[in-house]
Image 1 (spheres, rainbow, N blue to C red):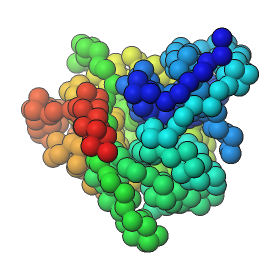
Image 2 (cartoon, rainbow, N blue to C red):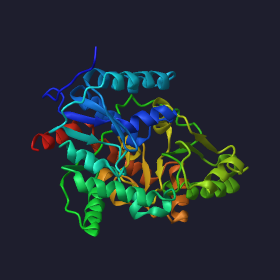
Image 3 (cartoon, rainbow, N blue to C red):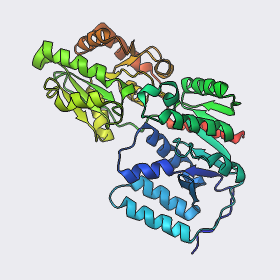
Length: 390
């Protein structure tokens, strides 16, 4: 039967599933933003219709097809493309335009925000848009991004400010950057909320043999702003000086962009061959197991919008050495050891110290039991309350 729909209190949300659709389509593992989109889909999906957009094409699915799409995105895997195409074909053939007026449009992953027609489409359908802003890095630090990304992200943020009824920021640091952008572009800021992201559900830490060879972990897409280059040059020196006794470095993350020198070192450096392990497709369970045994999580980033790996490390009892960024201090307080991302000498000293027992590592271990990690339950309690006041 046709999937007919008119808006109702049971489906007050329009969830933009576009980012998740195209991410699963390409077969890439989920990034941090993808995980946030998945968390929102799980929370709001039962009360939402799905939107899939590509360029200026937008398809709103009715309840039955929306639920099928959400289930398909959860499952992913082999055959996803054929199942998706069949689902969208049925949705188009059986299409009945829903009444969208008054629905809260949730765009959680920035996808489609740079489309020229989005603000007009939202206004014509009298939607109430809410956007989750993850960062303004392509605008504030374009040197770390793909060519043209600054212009695209500027369009995304301008469109968000043009039509948003509300903006959720993942951190106070991100909201401050958004407010500065709005002032520069001469836009009024819509109602806003800071809601820290939650870490995924944890499994129990794995007991490790303290005699195992020491290693460190860095988690995140391999891209210029993550500053992997500093660590690789540092590890070449460690291997040259310490030989087989040098600690190991585990790189958890897929290869990204603007990091050709990093890729060249990973592919061709003889010193790094036996001491740096690149894990481009790493399961969550393996990633957490690596965190459990690491001497520390390393986060030498030049800029971040949030920092889920920092939270995951601290809640699992793993020390953190991180760049001195406002957002890291916001979410982790004074527990990590903070260093200048350009100060290679201090990073090398810290890694040498943390390879064994040292006072700074002991301080972190003593402080971590008092760390209260943000979780999704608290996040959505805050967002639900805020949306309820719309």
